[in-house]
Length: 403
Image (tube, rainbow, N blue to C red; front, side):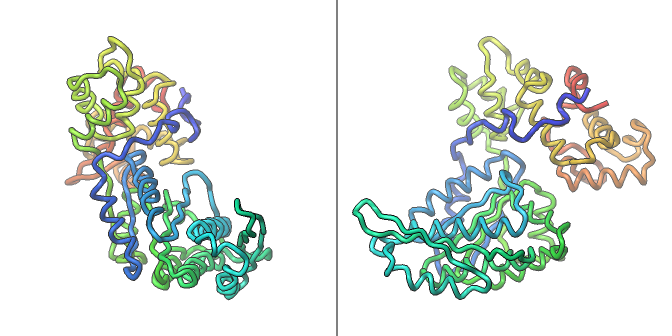
């Protein structure tokens, strides 16, 4: 009954290749135009559902920015559970490597980097380590590795120092520094750590003090991030320009599907779009699972009901990720199941699953915060049609965490 409950983030559905950048050029151009202007202080938050293409956008942005004079680094929180101190070490190290790549060959010899080293040493409680090697021409190359001192720093202090280093590096090098943080909503979780309760206030002060450094964040907690960056009561209100990434339009969705589904027809692509919409990941799962003579609707049901199906695994994964330890509370999945069968009002849901309305409202509020449910004109519904169908399909019910 709980076959999908403990699905790891490393299972096969996360190994699908990132889709080609399709119809995201306007987002890329907006970011490139702003970020390559050295004197323009601009920060962006790119938000959207999981696997909608945010990372693909950041990867392409990083590639194009590499051709500019800027010092660029990207850190992915989805791969590593950084605490503030570890994050700071990683950021400092990656910025230094990115800086070294921008140095011309003559600047890499010992004499050529003394000024930069002197600037780095000005940072409080920072030490500098060196590696000296030879380049292809036999000239000495100095590798500079600034790291935080060995004594235990407070989380807040190390977090501040890392961004202070970014500003100092921009000043010392005369180059724009761009920091990209993928799945950056993880920073909010630091509020549970000692001294980090007010991490968003700290982040605001850091952002306000940055000089010639731009920060680009991405995240999939849409409801939370929208409030964080656009809510008037948020510490970060007005500090970031919000860019929301949504599904592909039909023409672009069909293009993506046909690129990845061998021998598929335009008619088949239309049917796939009618079922899964323009979500790039869903389109790729449907394309990769294509079988000769299997109807589109049959393929969709198989992927959602088979315990090894890409969509089945994905839904179980996001339920686990969104609900966390609350996944064991059957009331949450009962509510999701009731919504999948059309009950939209609190009274209807309460009658179906037997929870009193005041308690039910609290559960629904949390499900909205987890991006699983949305509320419109007093009625509730599941945000994702795939999740909705997961609970509706009879075969999926037998193998899922529901009931």
